[in-house]
Image 1 (tube, rainbow, N blue to C red):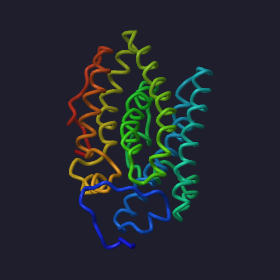
Image 2 (image 1 turned 45 degrees about the vertical axis):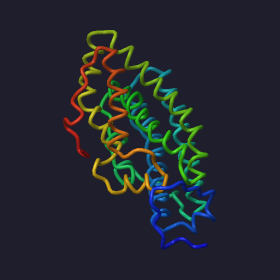
Image 3 (image 1 turned 90 degrees about the vertical axis):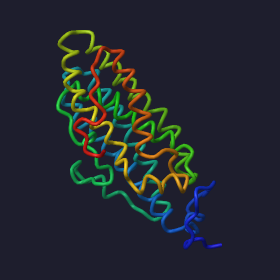
Image 4 (image 1 turned 180 degrees about the vertical axis):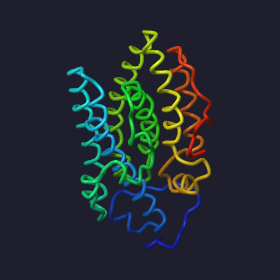
Amino acid sequence: MNTSSQIPAKQIIHVSGPAELLDMPSEYQELVKRQLMAHTEGELSGADDYVKLFYFLTDDPDEKKICCQLALDELEHYKRAAKILLDIGIDTSFMISQGLEERAFYATEAVKSCKNWAERALISFLVEDAVIDVLEEMTESSYQPIADMCPQVIKEEKLHVGHGFRITREMCRSEEGHHQIQTALERMWPVTLDTFGRSDSERSEQYITYGLRIRTYKDARERFARRARLKLEALGLNVPSDEANRKFL
């Protein structure tokens, strides 16, 4: 039965793959496509971050090697999501030749700028951890290919977060390093929180309605902020207000 004209109330939905997707309301189809496009672009931009930004911020050959290794993870994540999109007729190969500033689906400063090694540490420690929160919701996606994709991506992203945490912790052990991390945190905290999107987003509610997300952007951001704040304060850092210098309140 074609349900393209029906918009369901909040209910249990399960869509096993591309064939069933075509029978879903057009709104659902567009949300799936947009969510995957943002994820796909974000993973590719993450790979670029590691080899085009982070790599040149260190003279340590071991850290350069790690940047290359983590970039490979991000590129593999891009390929997995790109395959799901290709299965529904969307070719994302054009993203490969785009620069960071040309990518618009994942509109966050977090993947478009990094000024120093302290910010590099916090991007892995905080921003990639925020992404994990989103991915954990997507493991329960009503669109089964998305749910199937996420567990392995999360497993690998946790290694990235752990490395960022270790850099942050090590830097915080010296007075100079602690100052560098604290200064970086002033910029990276609002950037991290903005990765969750606008609190008043209509799309946020639509994702929940169709079982593509569990929490609103606002609830997901607040949940992450509480957890991350405790980790940062345990390192002796002063965490900025959640509203300071935000773009997407």
